[in-house]
Length: 354
Image (tube, rainbow, N blue to C red):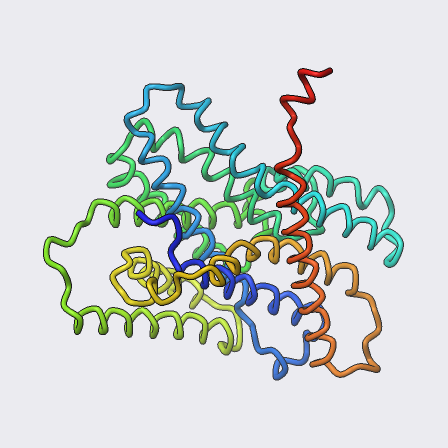
């Protein structure tokens, strides 16, 4: 399978941008729904969970025949993911804490718990999240840590039985307790975050997709008409998903119905049957993918710092455009700086010399 999927790469950036616009709107223009009517922007997170589950599932399935220690392999897998994301989490958390300390008069006692959350512990119930995206990473990592050894041990039995059971129980619990899926920080029965259950269910959808698509091979090359039809259906599905996120007026149980639609659209995209993957497979789209996750961290840092500023003398469009450009510029600079600095850090050499 190709390392990159152009469609998924572009969608990662689009949905990261939607999340950014959603947070800016509810923070700065809660009453101005006409300027930026993104009412269900939080549903983009389900897209990211399912996509993460897909690639995680493929990686775990490759390890099925390994004879190494499952739990050590699990830790290695987790560390591989953490070390890519941790620099962005640390930078966003520290800058946010400094900003709100001086600009918004936060006390040190309010800020210290965020340093636990910075290390993706918040979905355990440890620490706080000034940088809200961290809950998403925390829930993803916890879910994968639980799923990986089970998937290695049970193999296809997990795919056929346990994963579907977890999905239906997970969303069933959420459906009965919450009117919508905007529940990342809501605790169920003072025991477990709703966002963690949501991540666990979504990631299992991705795991199933990974196995099914990997093991479904077309014996006959599809005709062009078939490919055109599939491409058109894929396009319509994403237009429908993004349209609902942008224009549907309020959160409701409709959120749960959108999950199967997202799953169907991703099934087409991951299968790479349509023309979109070929058309979008280029360096520019891959670059957008690379900055999509840093964008998820940094936009929350920007709005937390500027949330209390008085923008009454400026138009809403100007403020929105300015904050968006500032976030994107900071993200691009940060991405390139980290990619320049991190490869030069050789911890093994440092330890040996000491």
